[in-house]
Image (cartoon, rainbow, N blue to C red; front, side, top):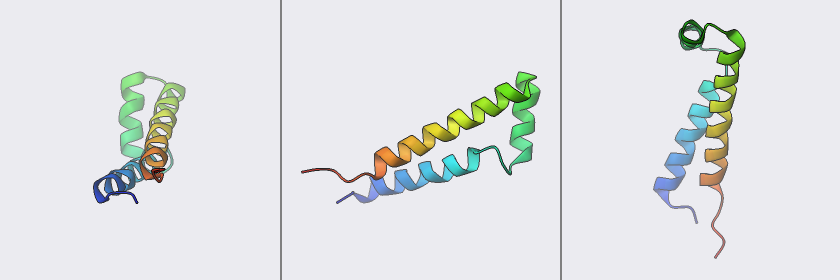
Length: 66
């Protein structure tokens, strides 16, 4: 059984993974574009960050084998 703290952390990671996916939060995306001066680099940053949080979610939400 997954303990409660691990499950909450997994849910938070899923939230961030879905938020960071580059469709729907224009202001944050625009700020990063202004910092990097490149659409493609910004897009890559957001996809990689989203993938990281999805991987963390799957890792944290898996059942422990006993």
